[in-house]
Length: 181
Image (cartoon, rainbow, N blue to C red; front, side, top):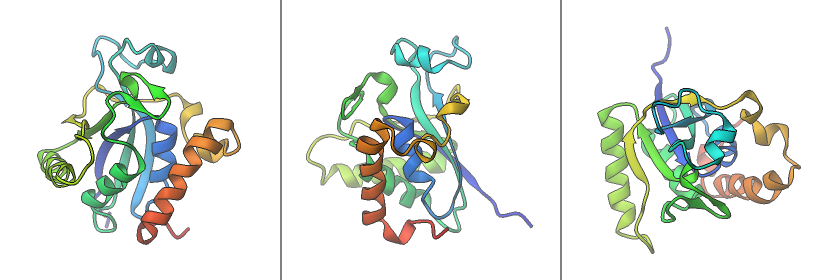
């Protein structure tokens, strides 16, 4: 008997950061870096195309998770802590539409959870939340060298100074959700 899984796609800036956090979440079964919600005329965009800011695609991670182990709400709570949902088309020094904050849902129930949480958080946030909430469209996996980037390059400058602090923040804030293995 197989356990039912769900899939959600999230854009929280550079996918290296987002992937590095979510691979550590108990109940997340697979994390894939990719691109979505861009110009549908550009099929399977390349990283070089994305970096121009002209494709409309966002850097994202596609998460497959076991809702019996971790809820969508918990995943979104992690998402909102490990990136800044109040900066439009920017995360830290990474700027451009490809770094926008987005929740790209796969069914209407996910959209409802996302919008409810944003409304709750918005009441207490210091600035308006600009995270877009849209159905996932035109998803394609990023190139192989982007997959598991932090795991494979932990001492690379960006990883050491940008990704690692986000991973540490997740582990401190959500100790109960950190994968045991």
